[in-house]
Picture 1 (spheres, one colour):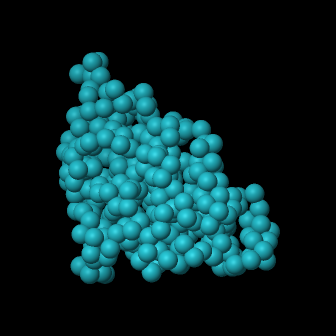
Picture 2 (tube, rainbow, N blue to C red):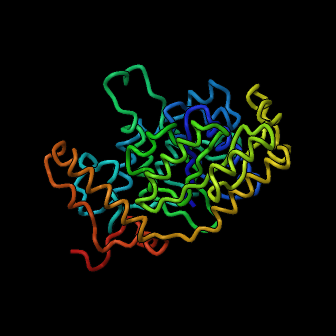
Picture 3 (tube, one colour):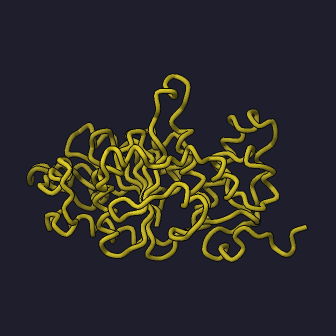
Length: 328
């Protein structure tokens, strides 16, 4: 299952993402973690030092490698140069598994705190005033478009804060999106904004409360959120220790907070995968990007990259990187 964590800045979504990842790893579940936030803090939250986090290879720096590998022998994609962030897979494309050896993972994925982690890379000084951060997360969108996650496998993505998460089709790439909500009117307002954006595309928004100090805070969230609220994280000595650089075993997390992580996992595990809708959304946003900017930039009709006969999902894996026998 593909999972996103979103929320307003300062809501604690990166901390919650790290706790969920560590819980899944402790349970022996295959996990691929991705830091797609403009502020790259997930590695440190998982236990890396600042120096180790800075040294991690960035997905954005390997975009030519990623494009060349994923396009495989797809005849609809003439070169990596005409492959954009929304290009969907088709016959001949290479698909990824959550756990496998491939050139992209070799170049970009490293183990941090027991989890396999990929990072987009920070918003650098050279980007100021001239670059859009969403170009950096294009590598993440490409990976998710081509990734086949099986039963009991998890891809956990820490998204950028605020409504910027909806500035590209990336928000449709998840089976469940957890919105981290503090017990404040401002944070609840962000939830309602997210819910309105997501409704059109059938994106499932589930709320996890955070920084809940007492029953009054919990009652506020229950009243404001209703059925979308899966649980909440209370103030935690475990988390405060992590913020001081002391990484304790996830089993030492307070029982109520551990129960919230398990409730999140139960929500994810209850979802029925819909690969046809997943591919349909990928195609829809690809066509939107083609019309908005990509055709003009490349000088061609990139809508032709869409393979109308391609069926995404586990049944496509045997043909990964191969052309069907019937293809000329």
